[in-house]
Length: 93
Image (cartoon, rainbow, N blue to C red; front, top):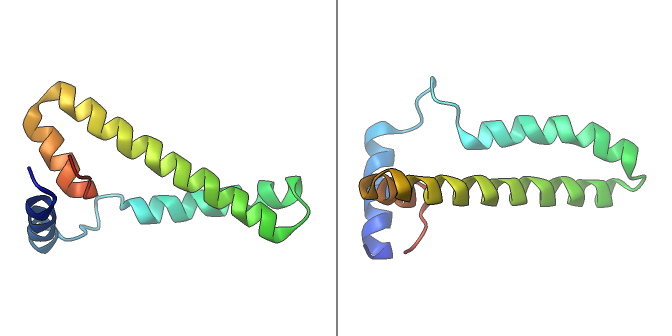
């Protein structure tokens, strides 16, 4: 499926479903994780800009690993799931 169709499907899903309050939104989860990591990172590294960069690297790396894992796992379950996850995360083939 081409990237253009995946983006259109993702937009349609967002318009239909939106961000339901009962569903834990990834950005909110990342914000909570960032708050939890900030204190230990500041205690570990003296300079706030370096400790902040460390938190960013951890968050981005974790998001990439979780996203890749979900897409990889979804392929083994059913091809339709893989398409859904690719549309949800806007990942090209």
